[in-house]
Amino acid sequence: MSDPVIRLLLADDQALIRTALCALLELEEDFEVVAAVGRGDEIVDAARSHRPDVALLDIEMPGMDGLAAAAVLAAQLPECRVVILTTFGRAGYLRRAMEAGAVGFVVKDAPAEVLADAIRRVMTGERVVDPALAAATLAAGDSPLTGRERDVLNVARSGASVAEIAARLYLSEGTVRNYLSAAIAKTATANRMAAVRVADERGWL
Image (tube, rainbow, N blue to C red; front, side, top):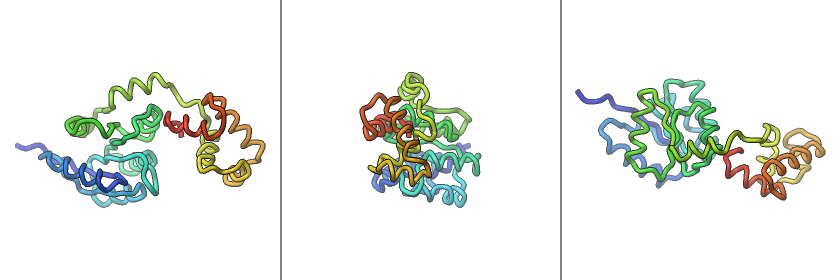
């Protein structure tokens, strides 16, 4: 008796990668790609329509990032297991992915058989995480940024002035300066853009 077919949803904003992954996954006899989307805000509707067993989500996509989509899927379609599949093997991303309800985290440069194995293992109830990333996450510890410091840095990444950040977040300019100073200190950087870069690299934003 053959193994039951595992229904997959794939979300990646790069068409070439999305097409290649679909072709690769379809080579496995027990996999069927039932949906492939290029935007984060298409993920939940596609999952509702096609009822995949596993959703493979990239992190950085237009409309909604993969971590936010993972949280929505975990809340609304808990039977769909989420595996984050990304080029961004950053410790902070792994922690946030697990908090969002993902049960797997695989980097895109992993061998095809590693991804296939991860999909099968999450179907049995396991959590599957890239071992090097898991070790880095433990070493990195929790993000030192508060929610508001993270909000301020996220707005600052566009080059917004203190006044613009204050207006966007309904804060006073003095409060914004305080949050920026705290974030700069916690990232051991010299200015807000450097703080954004370091926080982004560590997956804190």
